[in-house]
Image (cartoon, rainbow, N blue to C red; front, side, top):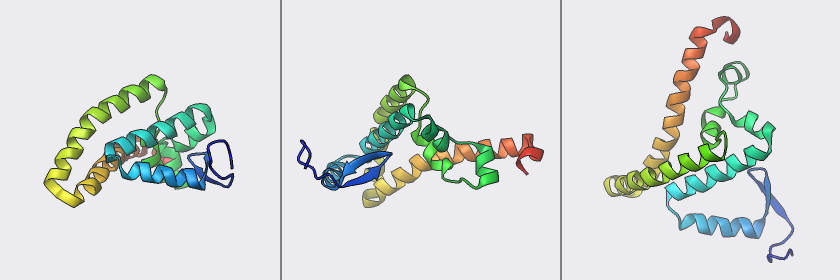
Length: 147
């Protein structure tokens, strides 16, 4: 047991090791939060980890070459959780929190129990759409390099 009362056995989460009991406490906290708040916390954790680990930042950012040539399709999603610096992260999270809370509320009212799932799809879909157009643009500009 450590000084926080958590056992020393750990689980890996965003390149940070968390004891199993502490991880269970986080799951209970997340269950009581809105989807918007959960996305803000997860994005902040991933971005902060990437600020201090450059190789993590490079592995998570969207890179059309790595997607098309190396099949790293996960970058469509992970890049949405990484920000360039503290100001970028803070402003994006403040704006997302203010607008996301309102949109999430309307989705819950309009779609009832499916509202949270549609909200998550909307959030992930915006990254997919923007990166898909970026990928298509780069394939057209540099066909010899990408194909």
